[in-house]
Length: 157
Image (cartoon, rainbow, N blue to C red; front, top):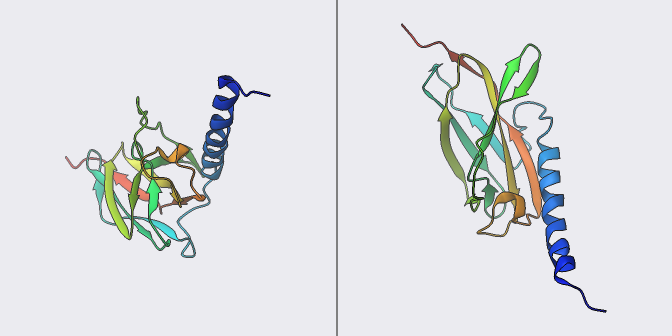
């Protein structure tokens, strides 16, 4: 029995689809700030932040080996809406970029949106194949962590 090109393409797509589904499911309902027991922690850099400035974050990992994060949109910002959190629009990449791998600590920033209360969620992987986008890097483990809330104040007059 021969396997045609369509079946081979289907077999190679199924693992990617399952990983993408898991990644989105794992970040669908973050519970709050990163737990101290998580091997990856996401912390907002404290200090006053005003509209138009940058929200700074530090990522600390204790995983054996490199941690992999998305290169296009490292974090997903959420805004506080009453008692719940609403996901803000994510940067769309026209071409998938290879994921970023790092050991130890990583710092980065994103532009601060309008005044309000925000937090960030970072999806990460370990044991991932290098040179691929996070969703297709066949990671041994995928997880997500959420920062504490950050207040963005109006621009000073």
